[in-house]
Length: 284
Ligand code: PDD
Image 1 (cartoon, rainbow, N blue to C red):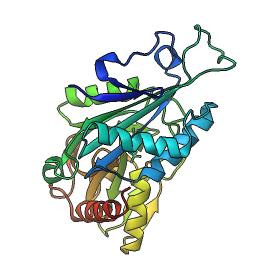
Image 2 (tube, rainbow, N blue to C red):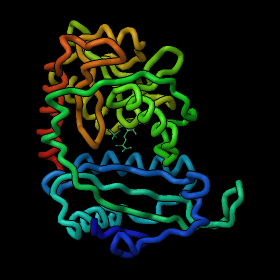
Image 3 (spheres, rainbow, N blue to C red):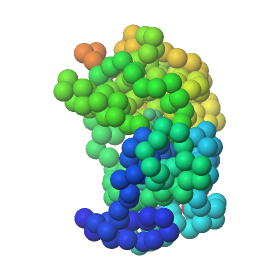
């Protein structure tokens, strides 16, 4: 691949973009990230992602190195420079390089990286087939609302799911589903009610989740924001996951149990349709 990436104000061929071995992102996972979808060359749900970016940074006491205008300009320019029609923009801000020390450096210079990944979001074949889920314990830290790059455990969970023949993992804590390895988890009850875990430090505050809830409510779908057990999920009429990378993907199996009739359900499809239409019309 021959992408142009953004690194601290410079546009570089991907092989030329280098970060210090002393970067705290590398040594301590002292960094946050965002993933924003691009469709037709435009940014989807951009305001939500930048708002969460600022929140994650402020929770870690990292000052955003780019102004609001500069951040938007960089997002637009990376799409342009890479001729990206459909896919993702990955953005990472670390506290920056400093001699290795558990205490933060006094005056860090953050490292900012953006790169693109081309990907079919609208025509994802998994929308038709659905995905299978393996449940695994949620052994992440307790501030999952901060979108840090500490992704080793979610990677391990995904590998464990793959080892068990599933497509992804749902993470479980105290018998309750928290979320998927890199997506928000939802179920639909037999009466059509959408059930999704309420916001707290236990989950990432999904930007797609927020949009789906709002659109569900305006379409007259009842929404319950509360935790649910693995057992309730297995008995649900539908299950699905949401994220910037896939919008809404149906779940047709959890562990050894088929969900509903084992095929993607109508509520997930309806919500994906509503989300896609609404977010395409407001893309910037
Ligand atoms: N992950 N929960 C977790 C743990 C996530 O990592 C993500 C997104 C979500 C969904 O959030 P959003 O709707 O804002 O994308 C929920 C991104 C896509 C990733 O790590 O690639």
